[in-house]
Image 1 (cartoon, one colour):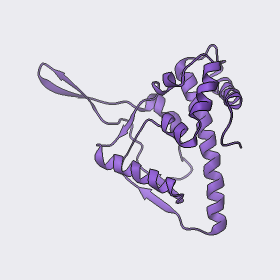
Image 2 (spheres, one colour):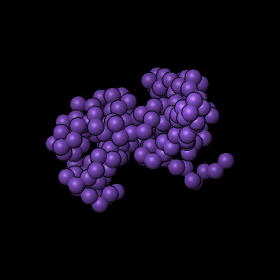
Image 3 (spheres, helix red, strand yellow):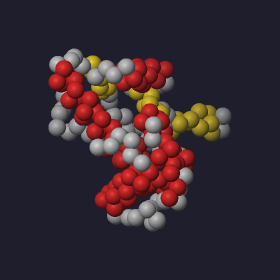
Image 4 (cartoon, helix red, strand yellow):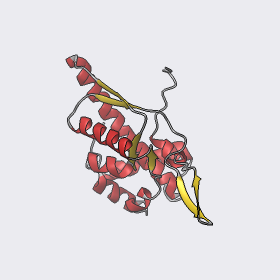
Length: 181
């Protein structure tokens, strides 16, 4: 798999995702469908990179790091992953031919604020560092249905509302139903 697909390849991959997962074409797709198609194409690249990295680690007999944390305050992942993969410009070009701006898709992604802030952010930074240093590391956590609560002031009183981040955010998740602990 090409880890740095050009704009033409990205457009083709997104059109395939739109057709297969949503039964639509690029012209009829909603922004949310385009966002999810973009995420799915990025996940394909990340999955292939992980598989190749895992094979190299296995061949070398290297140790692995497994990091279990109650929370990871990741934020939005599409922009971060495109930046880290060096693919922002190619995705911008591909999406422009589809009549949408990449910035519009960034706005479709809910903020996965999973945890209470500081420790969750530290855990996410720790995983970023491990990845940047090419350590074979995997982070595990609980899958929260709700993230940080939303706060409203009504008649001078604080009201907490659930932050339902999963609709839209679930596209990044990879369920592991084959292993239960």
